[in-house]
Image (cartoon, rainbow, N blue to C red; front, side):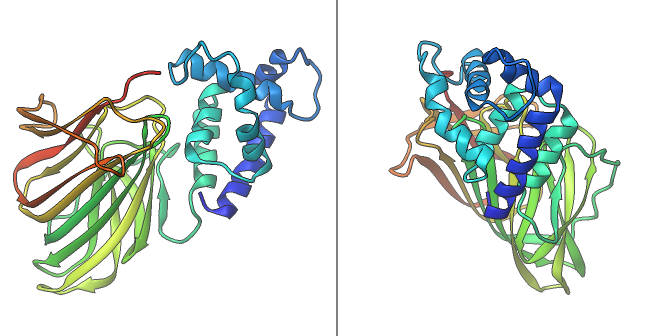
Length: 305
């Protein structure tokens, strides 16, 4: 999280914990403190520890966990350091409302034109523009955070225009996300599709003529409130050339097993699964010269602590 985003998110987080009675009462009970005043960090640590224990994210035999969280909570509330995983702990532990969670998500998203935050928005139905391109290469890096949940996804995409085009429709399967275009365009307004899918049109920096190529890079940051399936899948209908897929795991939450899989349909079980080992960087990788009319990706099992 960029420095300015950390500071503005921490300011609002402190305000919510101090001023909203439904949140303040949780940490006050932990320290037998019924009056208002400054946030008691020990009480906050106990609330988060209870959340981690109750949800199997930390061993319940570690009774010293609230004390271990002290420095992390202090840095978060002081605006010194606040990861998205830590922010998720605050939101879930204090059972924050969707509106408050969405506000914190927007504050934590890097500032700049062309960023789109979906969380908390009412998305209107939309229609995908017709496909006007071919994929020359596709690089996707999927990052799993220290809580075992998807944290972010970086994509570098090179396309060739089959006919004139000025935007690329990016499709994904959750509204608990934000999209940041790093280079090559800007993210437009999100819209809802059928089958619980969502889309953002990436407006290209330069309109393309037939035969022109363009490279753009974008990052999707996730905000899952309910843990999704432990998998990353890439679906294709048309032919996609030079596909490079990687899943990176956090060293604090490594999977017990990982499989490379192929699915016949989005709602089907995989018809091929091959166990693969983590590499030296604690990730898995697969390069494919092309894919077409298929769904490929990785599945994994991260045990509950």
